[in-house]
Every structure is written in structure tokens, then in C-alpha cells.
Image (tube, rainbow, N blue to C red):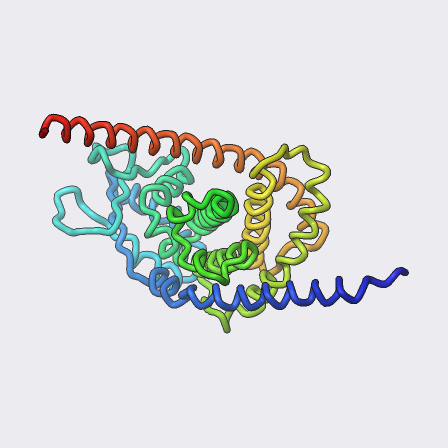
Length: 322
């Protein structure tokens, strides 16, 4: 076997060391205690239904009667039976769709209760993780929402590194500064995702508590970059920014899906499963990346048009003043 030139080995080591320094700096911006505090906030959900039996059925969907009495009691503290005439205030109200309800209310669909969960997550994102922590039906939908959101952020960041005007629009405090290599930023955001997924799964949150998962994410960054290079040749991405954004989206998706399974059933993807998931995610990532880039182009055109109109209006006002 031919040996690598000494310069190539030392260069690779230097790049790895620089990446680890960048990740360490980026992690200084992450605050797992804030994720923990948000997850542990108390939530009161007002349940409105046409009868006691209907209320019991709604409760039993969110807190199944097969649960232990202690677990069910904790869930029922969140799920408060309410009357339409009551003055009680709740963080969230869920009304039976068999009742007359306020136009903005979240309704409980007896035919499709999963749709109710998705609506709560979409319209009350700040409540998703606290609810998932205690109510099983919210867990996987919340995890999927978190994975989708962080994957999209990482894809956008990959585009933003080539379009600097977009970078200020991203809420990554660790994306600025001299340490912000692409891979370090993406890795830090994946670790943030790990905090959120643990919170939604009622697991412990923090660097020490999740040291195994964090170590896997940091080490895996090298592996998924190499795997991406191998798979990109098999998938017709086209040129420009699409490959870079697609790889960032796919890598984050696979990390998230593996973590979700680990927190749900106790083991993550095998290497073979990870590679298969990568191939699927890269194919979909190409479509997602193309959509994001097109959206940014449209947004940029609107902003330029608005700036031009604003400038023209200002000049007209100055002429009228003269």
C-alpha cells in the first residue's frame, strides 16, 4: 500500500485540529440550560368538549389509560377540563370539533387526532417541546419538526456562506467570527438539535449528560463529508450552490433521525442504515436546496425593488421640497 506524503498527513491533522478548535469556540455560544428551562416550563391545556365522555376520550388520546397512575396523573395536570363560560386562562385551548368554538381555536379531530397535534406544533411552536416531554403523541411529530427546522437552517447557512447578504438573516450567533468554518457551524447547530431532541424525549440535557451523542456528532462530521463526496457523484445535483446546501440538509437530517430513534428505542442507526438514509436524504436534499435558493432569489428581488422604490420616493419628495 502506498504511503501518503508526510505533508498530506500533517495537513490533514492540522485541518482536523483547526476544526476541533472551531467547534469548541462555536459550542461556547450554545446554552443547553436555556433548552432545559423551556422544556421544563409548566403548561396548562384547556380541554373543551360536549360531554364528560368526550373529555375522557380526548384525555385518553393524549394520556392513554395504559400508562402508570403516576405518569397519567402528571399528564392530567397539564390537561385541564374546562367550560366555555369559564374565566380560566390557558396556554393552549383544544376544543372538540363537535362543539361551536372560537374561529382561532385548535380543534380536536376525532377522525384524525394526529392532525390536531401537528396544528398545535405549527401554531404554538414554543409549547411543542414541553408538551412532547410529557405527552407521548407529541414526541415524534415534535422531533420531526425540530429535525426539519435545523436541517433547513443548516442548508440556508451553507447558501449564506456564498451569499453574505443572507447571513444576517440567520439566527446563529456562532455563525459570525473568525472561528466560523462551515463544518464547525453545522456541527454546533446539530448539537443544538441534540439538546432539543433530548428535551422532547424527556431525556437529560447538557454537555455532560449527552457527551456520547455530542462526541458522535463531532466525530461523524468527518465521516459524512467523506460519504457525501462519494454519493454526490452518483446523484445529478447540477452546479452552483445546490450540492453544498443539499449535503448540509441531508447530513443534519440523518443525524437527527438517528438521534430520534436512539432516544425513542435506545439504539441509533447502524452504518448500513446510515448510508441508506444518506442516499435518500441527499436525493430529497437536492429538491429542498433548490427551493431554498429560489426563495432567496425571490426575496432578494423584492428587497431590491423595495429599495429602488424607496429611493425614488425620497428623491421625489426632495424635488417637491425644492
